Length: 401
Image (cartoon, rainbow, N blue to C red):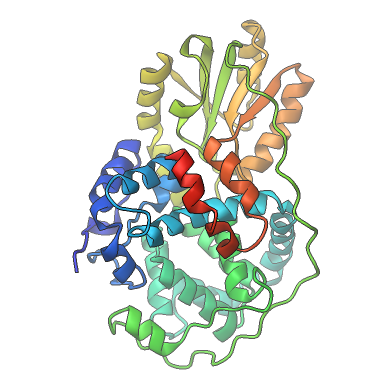
């Protein structure tokens, strides 16, 4: 089987690095990916997965250009498994955008459980990889050291955490949020809910010794795993909302562009170069769950600065969430009323932008969030399960790419 070698599980923090990795992966997006995608060969080993997730997470590269690059080399049918994997991230974001209650529940439960389980020895052993469970301990250490885990290993880990160790799924999801480079509120939370039997009510994911041994090429053969997985239950969720209606973006208005880590692709925001008067970038630790994610974004600053200079012929100005007066005073001094920012899905940036919107409104300024066409088209179909969603994908892609 053809395989791609990505040394040291490194993720150079730039758009150029993401595009290069995409280019190297594209030939493998068909049969090699489909055949080998479930196998975790181990860190620093050849892999058929793309390892593009950190770049897609922060939109250093976009879902649309990723799928477009693949479809230039393969038919949809040949690359269907990979394209669906990219669309899972889109689906999760859309699903959560229409059910913000799920994320709000998660935040409330986490606040309670983190205090209840503070200094809990079972949690500490799971996070430090000292449970004695083969594979699980290795993945815990790999996650902390590298900021990455193969997707199949994430499922095994979550299942063992929930059903073998009987630990709260909410704290397992928080462990991933703190350490994964690519974790976002939707993909991470909803994946853990799916394993626990909440996302698709009653349907759980049970990790087995045989499955782990098979798909790690015999590297791990854990003993003592749970033999059954009783689904977690919760109070009923409200019906999905419709997507929020956003303020219209006035492409001819004098504007300030405000960037954040949930979308680092300002090149696609439909603003005329001559109407962008300043570009700010907010990347406080306040907006990140873990150090690795923040370090990745902080290290991408020079790349983003160069791209902003090329696109708008302007410097990139760092903005602190604790000192937003810098932006407000600049807008007032230039008589600018429109602050444009890429739309942030549910999560920390979303929460902050909504509080900042109130602050801006008080100052007589409008925060205009721009939602990508990709999201505008795909998200409304995320009202049910993924298998209903994926039926729409081929026809939508024929229009988009």
